[in-house]
Image (cartoon, rainbow, N blue to C red; front, side, top):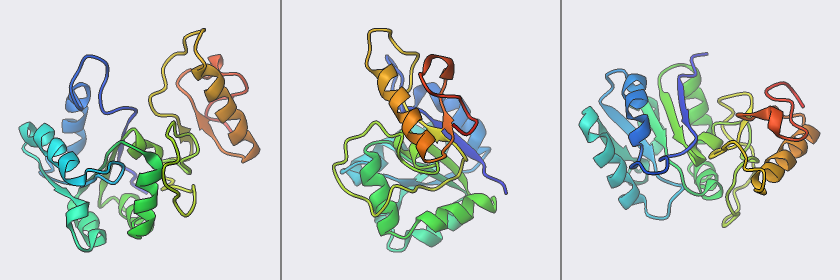
Length: 203
């Protein structure tokens, strides 16, 4: 099982441009691959989003093709070599992955090593067993919350060391406790600070 993954918590960090902070890691991850298929489904503007990714990756000599523009995206993923699943709304993203019958296609392609998977934000969230650790509002309803399961633990994108006066710590702790009832595994960046979370072991 290959599972070549690059999972980014965010598309940007404060004060930097889109994917700027991760460009070196992306270049190393692609390892000379010159074609990337892009899943823009977490955004409403598929064309604009794909154009932004193309502009960002052009300095790496990479050509980006949006899956929205392909009649049958399944074979395109299998032959691409690299798949980037962008951030946005996780509910919208997962709904469209189900709608286009891409869940099993992506799982198989990543598992057999034919495709390297790069995700950012929502794209990282759907690499988990479920999308239940999303921060997003349920603006649409996917057929289920089970996701790609490319990693055996949950990730909370955009997680930062909590401000003692912030509600983020409480929300993440509630997420960890909720997942414990589902026998999930929770992957937090600083579990010692999250009430009820025991890290990447079953909770």
